[in-house]
Length: 70
Image 1 (tube, rainbow, N blue to C red):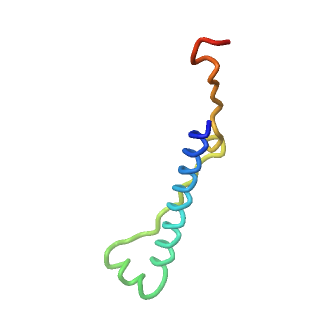
Image 2: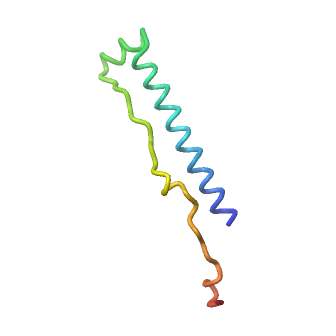
Image 3: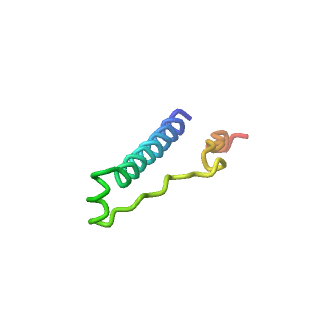
């Protein structure tokens, strides 16, 4: 169970890191003088990572069935 929690925390951290990186890129693409370089190299704004709420919930895991116990 602890491993599942750790994995979910790592996924949440990765989502947050991606979105903060996208925010930084989008700001630079719009700000002078970086926008001049961005325009020359065809850099564009990126979309944020959006995950539906039902996919963020922790899955239910039942360990009772692993050994045939009921």
